[in-house]
Image (cartoon, rainbow, N blue to C red; front, side, top):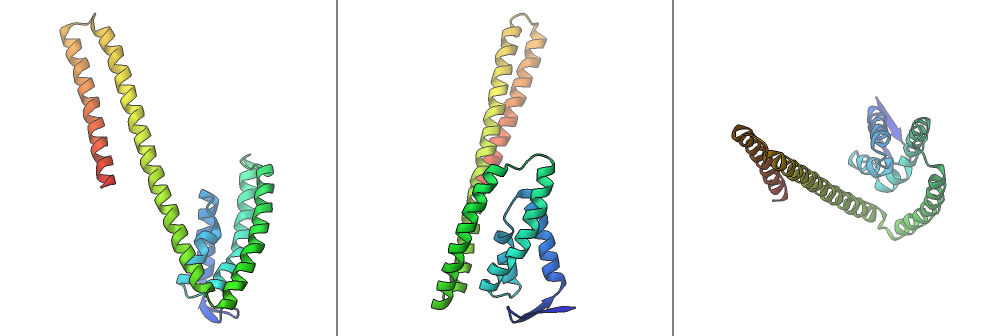
Length: 193
């Protein structure tokens, strides 16, 4: 069943906007990512003009934000003071953004600017998340190395009083820890290449 969209001057299968709204709402609720950040490029992929997609996805953002805020408020995760300042900035930014789109639309560049902006934003966020992941992996590796060194010192201190067999068992455990660190280092190096 197709749905005619008079502002976009196109028809799409009714399951497309419902499915997109559901998927983006789910991701927004889970990860706190902006619905518009995800929904606008998806609508553009389905043939909706970029100016219409950017303006219309606000409906989905309101629904997902309201239900997500309510659910997070119930478990005590919402800071309303910070939210008030975000709301104020978002309101002013939204007004300025609409005026900028009107100006770009009058110049005939709105679709191009929206598409390029999304490409840049998605690329920058993707690179940032990749770098954050690598830094997290490095911190984990450092923590493991420190734990192994600490345990080694502890075992060496105790090892003075241990028999030869016990010292060999301690050395075997230390070697295994070093091998694990080496494997983690090799996996990290492969990711960086």
